[in-house]
Image (cartoon, rainbow over all chains, first blue to last red; front, side, top):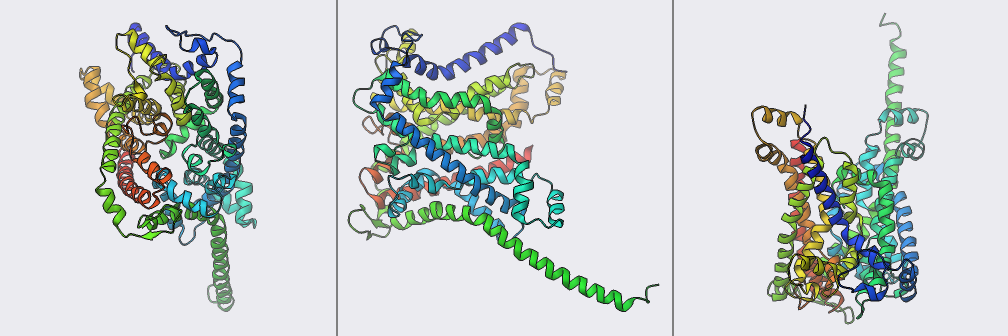
Length: 276
Length: 316
């Protein structure tokens, strides 16, 4: 048996953990506090550690000065589309790779997983050149079509599908079920947790994406939220309280949502160890 | 007993055998078709939007091209120029500084947090894990905007906080001496929670009896940390180190949002050097050559990672 250490030692560990948790989240605290300050209080010394303006004035102004709403609608549309498409493409690919034996399956698997070794920073230039050739620059197509399928989701689902016992499938086969009916009626109902996890990941990756919209989109009304937000900050005079209000609208919903789904999330990471 | 129905049995066997083969092969053909219908679309997307661009980058890297005039073949000239370009080596050096600044710090802090969280009697472990994980799920671009405000030289929180312990205010993102450190701080902050998850998983594979035995033999907490925890955790540490190394090598978003490679190009890391050449100077051939060099380097790092992760599994 492991003995509990002395009371004071335990308190010390809790203090260390709490202090770290606070320190790590201090930027978010400060972001929210600043977003509720009038412009004159932003630079006050010593800084005020509490909100001084209990209204959404900065939020309203942020949405008025920058097309935040447009960015958000764009991002929601793109993220939703990518998620829906990946749900179809990734499920099919994962199913083919995990439940059907066919010649060349190991090559297909290697090709798909191999894309994880080719980072976005490397492909951004040639992908831009190719998408430009297609005439998709500054369109939703550029933001959606290249991401219709992704190795990470395929890998995640494949790992899950492989844990489903074959006997279930065999029984259905004997009853004369085709491959895709088995997928629809047996595999998918059993895979809801994995599908849910994948959708969360895809949506978050899409919501957080920055590099590709930065290079593929130059027209403001087509821009996504992350690039739009950071453009706002590089203007010559930064209205910090408004900028923090805008940042809060981008960051806080994700954090709140994360609190509800954190279990699936963190388990997904240790399962794969492939992607953040 | 056996001889009586020989003819019938044989006929039955033949029919059964050939019928079986025919059925099986029909099933095999059907399966192959189903499989390709299933994997085909995803594979096609990956080929068109990952492999074709990679091959295209290799092709473009052998040309001079500004997207206005037609491509001109220059052979290996872009690579030769790159190897002789001081700006390239400078960006590699800056990337190296960033890597050295982020990898050990983020690993040490993550290990420390994981050790604290791994204590058996702790309550609310899941809560702390979530708290440490928040920066990981936050978009780097948005987080970098917030950090830009924290690092603001006059009125920013960081300068105020270090002022309370008597350190003079720094210029941070406006200062050639401090901008890189600011980026390193953000990079470490963003990844601690991520690395902690791996260390926690690693720690949980170490059997408790080892510690029990060490305690009976009279080993104190330090002794058992250095002779049990650290050695048994070394595969995890190696794995995390390589993962972090690759992530740090690829740093781009924070640079793009917070410094744009400045001030005075003191934070122009390799990815930003690539970005500038492509999208500001429109030197597509040269930028493609940089991309290919980056790809080769990252490919080698990832091979290391695969070997390390195999080792990790082996140890468990």
